[in-house]
Amino acid sequence: MPLVDSGLGAWLKSPALYVAAAPAGAGSWPSIAGTAEILSPIALAADAQTEAQRQANLFGKPLARDQVVVHGLQRHLQGQCVTIVGGRLGYSGAGLPVFVIEVDEQDNMEASILHVLRPVA
Image (tube, rainbow, N blue to C red; front, side, top):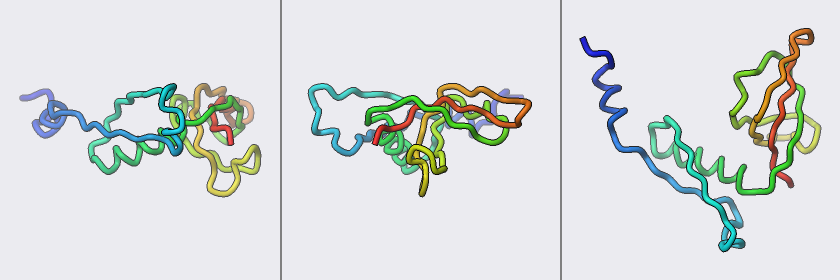
């Protein structure tokens, strides 16, 4: 009996998808532009391209550290890129993508303080 399903095994052995994305205005600073590689289990090329562009748009700008209080215990958001919606610091409307670098769960309040990196407008 195999330890791994044959379909999953074939997928794991297949070559990785590579996609590239650049934030808007990246050509303005070609001599100091950085590059980043992110490995993810995304299986479809279109989904990988969408995620690459989303991350390029987030990390391709100056970032500021911020704290946001959210309802519920949200430790699972640490290390994730999420969209925060709220009236504070430009999070209103469609929200703002942020990268969660730390989560302080407040058990007594059923809330969490998210320490995030957010794009500077």
